[in-house]
Every structure is written in C-alpha cells, then in structure tokens.
Length: 249
Image 1 (cartoon, rainbow, N blue to C red):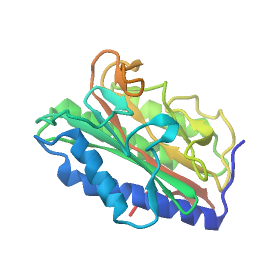
Image 2: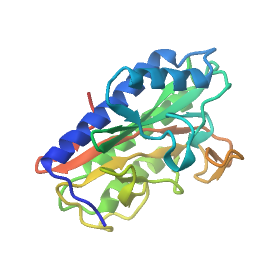
Image 3: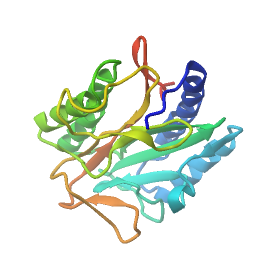
Image 4: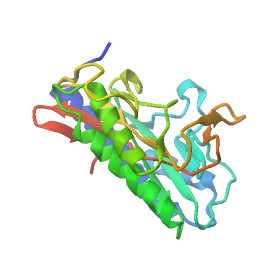
C-alpha cells in the first residue's frame, strides 16, 4: 500500500533528507587518494553525532553494520567501508540515510578521486542527469514508469545500462515503502502518481552490462563484467507544484 504524506509529514522527511545530503556533501573533502573507506564511515558517524537527535538509518537495518554505504568502482550499492585505500581514478558512490523525528530521508551521490577517464566522467554525468530526468516525471497524474522510462532511455541513449536488481522506493515512516521505483520501464504504465507520494529515486548505472552479483559479504552488489558503476539519489515529494526535491540544501 502506498502511504500518502501530509504537509507536516513531508516537512519532517525534508529535515531528514537534508541531514542525509549534508553528510554526503561533508564527506567530499575526505574522498581523495590515500584515504581508507573506513575513514569515510568514521567521518559520517562523527557528522551525525554532532547534529542532535539524528540517527543513521542504515546501521543495523536488516543487519547492515555501517552508517554509510561506500561503493568503489565496480561496486554498485551496499559497499562496506573497510581497509580499502582510495587511489587516483577511482569513482566512489556514497549512500546515506537518516532517521529524524519519526521519518527517514535518503540520498546518494558519486564522487571521483583525482582525475578519472573521460568515459568515467561521462558515466557520472549521465547518471546524475538521468536522476533529474526521472524527477521531472514525478508529477501528479503521471504513471510510475514514466519516471523509470525517462531514466532508462536517457542512460541507454548514452550507451550505458541501468541496474535492474535494485530499485528506488517510497519512503516515510519506514526506510523502504511502496511503491518500488525501477530504473527501467514502459512509459504510461505503473500506478498513477498522486500528490503526497514521497519517493527515493535512485538510478544505478553501469558502464557495461546491467547484470550484477553479490559479493561474499552478502551485501555488496558488483557489476558482473567488472565495469564501473555510478549512483545518484534524491528523496522527492509529489506536490501541487510538481516534484519537490526534499534532499536539497
């Protein structure tokens, strides 16, 4: 069941979402050559601990042991922070969720470490712009897969592929609510979008083929062909005035 949110609830989700993106922006200065990914985890925890009654949403969620997902290069989502050292040319996807005043917020973005290849630069650019193509379709009266189709067509026109095993989602009092928001789909299909829906829209885009597999840690998804992957996410409310990005400072 899709849970519609009122204005007060959307404002609470906005506060949570802004906290999430604040942490991701804060982490930018740490994403550089020689840094271990566990240092990003430590920095995110420190940032949250200094911001009051805010809890990291992912730590302990279904057993995930960290506050922050750190996915490097061929890691798509749910990368685990650890001893890995970032090197020049890496791409690093960071995904962070927040629980605040009874509601969740969620955001993700991908940073580069130093200079990266032109094709990798394009992967990041296309993935981020596909997010905004999807958000533009998050309007009352549209269909859910209008969002999905906008993301997929933009990505595939650029020669990349969208991940199908992982999707966006509704968000509110629960981190993951209905509906699921796939990054592929046929325009004009899916449920009708309504005012009060809040969606975490999150294209995950691979440079090569779309298939992924899970590493032995049971969490981290990686591209099957070893190609690079990128991930961007915003929490978005459908309002009378169109889509409103709640995870925006």
